[in-house]
Image (cartoon, rainbow, N blue to C red):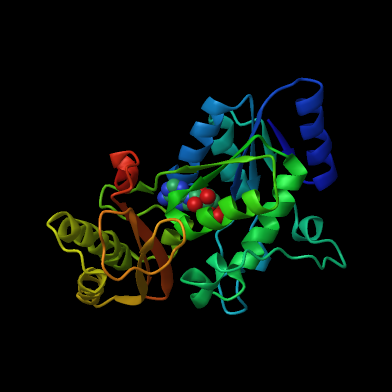
Length: 294
Ligand code: AMP
């Protein structure tokens, strides 16, 4: 395994792999502090592709001025050890200056999809995401790039970006990996105290309750949202930021549900830590989508 810090070196290594060795490349973009959620993407990439590149870059452009960019957990030594065990071929770990050289002034904005949910709570977040993913895709030019359903809105935005700007990369979205308690794995779970970690279980619980109510025949989006809200509010350490019940592709908010696929997304603070989660209903996708546990 090689760790690459320079964009130019990453491009030329990838070009050689494609042209001279005629091998397929899989890219797994991450911000490091790797956990089983990230590793599920790496495993799938390892199975599907000849060469696996994992990028580790805490992208300043996707953090707001009052967000946790400086505290965000970073441990490249530990990440490298993990990725060695998973037979990754290259880690691309550029510096901020390498990704955003002096004078950088071109940003990518996926309109519409970026302006709701996380985009409302975190203005500019998806512009940062879309821009960094564009640079990564252009640097590596992978055949496949792997993303988690955990960040459902991000996955939709990236699929749209790739379609609209005609990138020659197929986007693969994989199920959310969860703890036994149901809590979705996240690098930000490291911020939680033991008590907060316990309290955070209310997030997946609220989604499961909504899904159960849906299965039992509830078709009012308002009532399902109320159920999520009440469940979260039953936990004193939790504060709901938003719950949204929408079409799985357009994110268009739904009122009355019929038998179309539905996405429930939630963001909640547990103490000072903001966590997101979501559940798909009626998607026709593998059942394990909603409850994969490590
Ligand atoms: P991040 O390092 O948080 O930017 O995440 C990198 C990638 O890992 C993104 O595509 C995430 O959606 C994905 N990811 C993060 N947490 C999970 C999880 N619990 N299950 C599956 N994928 C995840």
